[in-house]
Image 1 (cartoon, rainbow, N blue to C red):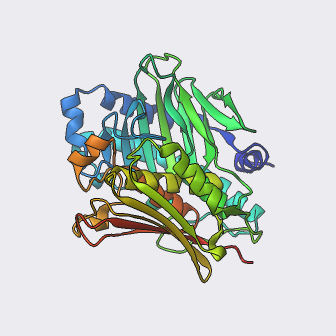
Image 2: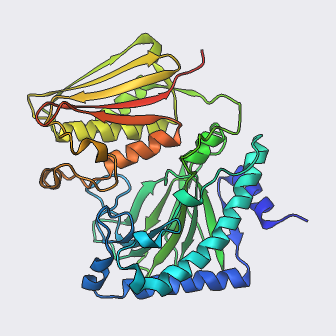
Image 3: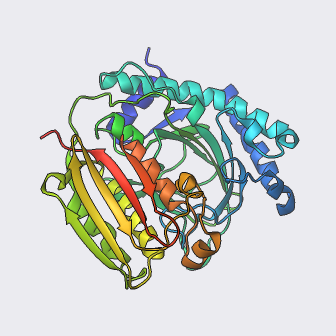
Amino acid sequence: MTSREDEAAAEILATGFAWVRLEPSEADLLRSALAGGRAFFALPESVKAQHVSEDLNHGYRPMGQEYSVSAERPDLNECFALWSDRSDMVPGADLLEPLLEAWAAYRTILDAIVEGVVTRLARHFGGACAPAFRRASYLQMNNYCAAPAQRDLLQDLHEDGHLVTVHYASGPGLEVRLDGKIKPLEAAAESVLLMPGSVMTGLTSGAIQPLYHQVRDLAVPDRVSLMYFVNPSLDKPVHPWSDEPDTSVDLRDAIQGAAGPLNGVAAGAVVTVAIDEGAARVMADPGRLEQMLRNLITNARRHTPDAGTIEIRAARHGDVVRIEVRDTGCGIGRDHLPYVFERFYRADASRDRATGGAGLGLAIVRRLAEAQSGSVTAASAGEGLGSTFTIELAAPLH
């Protein structure tokens, strides 16, 4: 007999996403989790603010702190997040026990679904089982507000950058990109949607592509979504399930695509590009590579004066390509360097407010680099002495 996990794995392979229908008892747990979240969002802002963590990763996050594409277009939702089973990381957790207990119960059923579906996908590509993921995954509930007249989207087109996202929305508005076209998805009753992310793309050597999606403003009152963002734990190496080589990407095209749209940002800075012959191609998803470069170039341009320079260099070192974005800007203090890739971290909050930064661009770069089995590092001789950000990705085998 075919299980729902078998059907979901087959559906992902065929269409790029899958619906999983919940059992009645599981649907009850979903309703309890949603009710707890809605009750929290109905609290006064002053009360919710008591549950904001210093790094904004745990508990409540006010609207405007998260964006899909650019800081100038924040996602139009407030949210609440619970990482793994670490309720102790949520400020004031003792005041939120009913909510946290309901979420923990709902997470248990999602863990079983993800384990089953991802294990079947792993075996399809020659792997053994799903990677360990519970310690590095988190639940997040979004509570949406009405979009202003000039915006038709509550969230811009993006992919989540995880292994898989388990998604439930209380109303319509979710749209996905399929075959190059944006299409609305009609939610199935008492079902959750499984959306592959770029980590899945890496594990399947490109066979399963990340599902890009957006949320359209349909003026639906009281619209919420509850997501489970699933990530492999990084305490052990995660290797692709498939031995099929991925297609290499022309690094010059990615740099041109990343740098071209940004001429209006600190346009006076001189940008130079130098790519060694052996580094012209790199193993990466082209869209993710371009976004990483765009975020680093944008960061450099924000913090480099008009008379300054920005160098983009690439060279091959053994089996990796090393891409450097080096600027002569304001630099980074030694105390700040260890934290620049953390979500919402600002080395100089007043400076980033003035230039539109929201503290997410560099965190996204790290997430995307790790999703492609790469890395990103930052270096600076100190304040006023510029900075260098270095991406390392696999080089083609030939």
